[in-house]
Length: 432
Image (tube, rainbow, N blue to C red; front, side, top):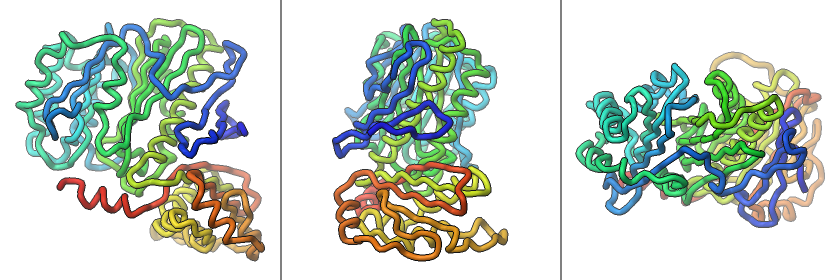
């Protein structure tokens, strides 16, 4: 059944019969076409004027795609949102500086190496930008870089330089599928989507599987569109989409050093007011899809958790509370095991925020639901068939948790996942 995800967003979800949340349909009502537009889970719609290539440079393993480039035919509008980690990658520092003017022409992604806390990291970043500019005939200041992977290991510059050589002859249009695979690290597979509304197209790809806790996550996300928008407008669209999507997911409460969400526009299609509104909705819906896919396909995850909290004080407070729930190892393991233990949710919403004193949450103000069943309502538990609910949680790949405190005037929605043995195995063996 189709439902609206946010009261003030033109964004809907229709949960698929499949057990894979990636099959859920995200859509919006187009003002331009006067019909419902579905976000497609492919890169079928790519702006003209883009060319790309992905190669194996041997950065981690021979034969694995790990160096990719996307080039715009000419410098275009670009905007980015980046990690708030205080140990950012050198690529993030570079991109922040280069995107001040709101333009870019080339994206290069190095996978399997984060280029963080390395002796020559800043110098290697400048060198890589220069090599790319020379090979692909662009200005170094129009080169955007991303690096993702192991922290503290120097970039293998000899391999990267060799990989860059000859890229200009390998570029081809419509090749973003290879790029979507090349940017991955521990991901199960590519996360992509695209949409067409009249002459406007937009597509996006994401990488992210662990170290996921915004402000953003171990996450690289790239949008490409042909819509003619100003740098300020593109930045506003991106900021507005990120907050409720990529900044509202969590896998393991760890904030990465490399998180980047970057949008590029070739500026080929003029927009009227309806077209501008459709572009906003398209970016929001694509962000919803990719954010949910990141969590659902994250390291060791078997269940996608959608947690909605309603509170009386502010949407920010509701979001903080929701994050406490999806970040709790006890809640995450309970969901994994199918244990409808509402006491763990009580614990989570009551966790203090630093050392600042806060008033207690009265049990008479709280209602807790799981999978649509009320477990606790304003003072006391509600009689529920817990064994049946447990079976439902175990059988489902999508688990809902809803909490209301007070009258619930403000709402926030976040997505998380369960915590399994496989998550521990992956991260215990990450470098070895």
